[in-house]
Image (tube, rainbow, N blue to C red):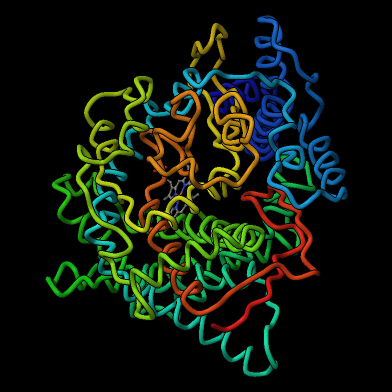
Length: 536
Ligand code: HEM
């Protein structure tokens, strides 16, 4: 519309000139309008929008730093993160002061747990939310515990391969040997996703995983240190490489998905991997074909599984081994339990996890927070998914306590898509909200004075009884409708890996280990996690 107006003006101004004039206007006018549009969008993003939001929040008495062009608090956060990471910390579990992510925000408000619940439920009624809810309905059955049971052999193979790798390293040393388990667990969880997601196309899966890993590194470096809006679109070497990677990932995924879709449509076996289960679930969803997931949607979900499922689980395993090295009495208890459950045999599904229906699950009440049941039955269905139940009690308590003290995802992010009132403050649309899981997991009012101590026994009677105040304040996998779809998968994988390690090795911290957790996207060990392993 604007372009048409511009043309009309051009014609009248240039009246009397030769016929080439309208083309001249088109030639110069359209690019000029495009440039103006881009400038307006950039101004809105880097100046007008943030100023509007900041004004609305400050007007209601919220304190915070003033907005700084062009990227707000980001450069200051990077500076503070660097400063925090340069400082050593004692080998304790009070890691919050070092986790700069929780301390960095200009507009910081202490939310009550009630308003937190409401915040986590945000974002559901938007258009995106509807599409997401439909996809989630389709995907949920693929992550059902009964289905995950079929993936146990893949988990087991990957864990055995890891132990074989460790044994071959041991063969070259005489006695105990040192390993950086951070690297080892990233390889393990990458292999598990590649194998469980793509079954027979495992090798392509591995290649996708390597490329995704490189992409994540490049993106993080770019957004952490370069604050030029739209920088990812500049023709730099880094961006060119990211585009190439992205094309290769999509090509590989498309090839695997299309081949498998044809097989599923022809009624051939879909396979016991996540992709097969997803495609089958898509076909059986009962949704009209235009509302089912497209190949593009499936590609995006597969990419997300790598990002969401790989690093988080390797972080959990890494901190578990570090913490069990710091607390050998718990390592001993866990080993006793594993050996009495399985001896030296491979852990089996029934031993690792038993399926209980939602109504019988003691953990369920954490999902029935009144603020989380927001938009009718769709989400209630999501909330009543069957969940794993506690069987290896000591191991489960340990994993919960590690997830509490070292939550792999330190914050949840939300953006208000419309104006909303929370805790007496009206947030306009477009406010970014970070919900610091780690602060709530370390809060002494909720967990007691010993909040920073490793005490798995607090989970002995289940999650709901673990806090001092009986508040539902444990949510390493998120909470409510958007709760992690892969939590059963992650817990099974972590239990399998931990059981196999406890059956085969004793471990302690290496003198070269420095305790330095820091929040990148997930909670990394800054200098790696060097552990000394002794074969049992
Ligand atoms: C210890 C391991 C894991 C932790 C701590 C974890 C944590 C989380 C958290 C905090 C969220 C965000 C929830 C929100 O924004 O409200 C999430 C979402 C998600 N996770 Fe996990 N996760 C883990 C493992 C996995 C695994 C193994 C997979 C897949 C195989 C997975 C797939 C996903 C997906 C697809 C989402 C997005 C769900 C949605 O919005 O519908 N995660 N996870």
